[in-house]
Image 1: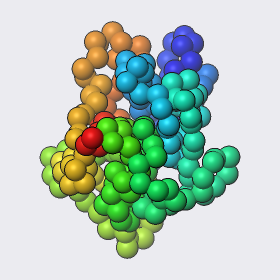
Image 2 (image 1 turned 30 degrees about the horizontal axis):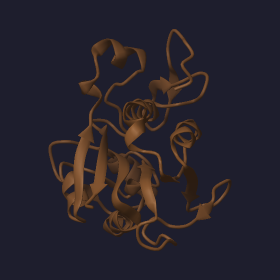
Image 3 (image 1 turned 180 degrees about the horizontal axis):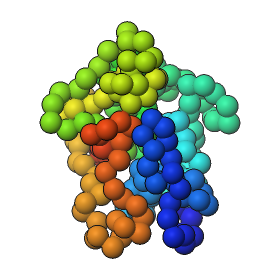
Image 4 (image 1 turned 90 degrees about the vertical axis):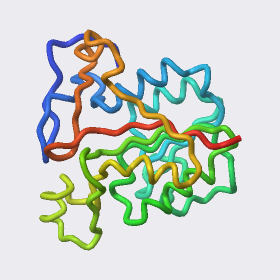
Length: 216
């Protein structure tokens, strides 16, 4: 994302260590995929942007294309709003673009979070949602598991699920129009340069990225 040149990416992990992190800006594979998509669709975006659990490298990109940029996180810190995604402190429809990357797998009631994302989008507004997924079966979830079993099943101690093939169905259920963002749609040379390989939080997973549009 910083456009610096290096021989290789740095290791990032655990639970699964991969050579994925930029030595300069710290961006990971999913951040670079988001940045490439934003670059290609910048004219369609802009407006008021809400960045949930903001990553610094992505935030810089969003500030450039937004007329107004705001950030939100449950733990507070250097953000504009401290709030939980299933209970957002906004009226209906104030945001034209919302970014939610690697959050839903942490939230026990993810359907409530998806409903809130839909509610706060303006008519025709878009949400970019990224989550780790294991293809070939349904979502595996259990918020009651101890940390050791969460690591084994979901790849991280604070994850409550690993999504399966039904992730898109959960997004569509709130009347969002969903389209996927796939790394393999980019040329092989670009995928190699930006390290766009299938990655995820535990073995057999990869990141699923979607653009979700609210009906006008």
